[in-house]
Image (spheres, rainbow, N blue to C red):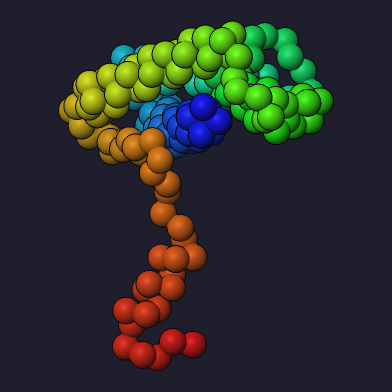
Length: 178
């Protein structure tokens, strides 16, 4: 069970990263649209897609933590922190949680995990819907207006590493690496 909690914690973090990359592109696209004095319908479409991503992010991550406020709990804790807490309860502990690693998980801990796991599956399914249907529809709207499209980053994927790109380019050169 500890491994499954660990796995769901990582999956939550991957989904959060995926959402952040998509939302960053939407923020940049919105700035571009404002600068181009684009039609209100394009701004509305950008805001609507951003809201869909934000709704999923709010389920995964405590909104005040997303704001950078790590000391405040003004709302419900998101799935990511719930998995961390449950992992500490079931495992060897962490912070102010003593843990329970000498004993098998209790029935309530198993029930909580099942509930959280189902919620995570729901968020993952919603993200798949957004990436497979909503984002392509948004991109079609942008393409009709002659605006660059956004791309989705699959959960678990990561943005290109600039240093690795530079090293690859240097290695691919004519041998005159300085």
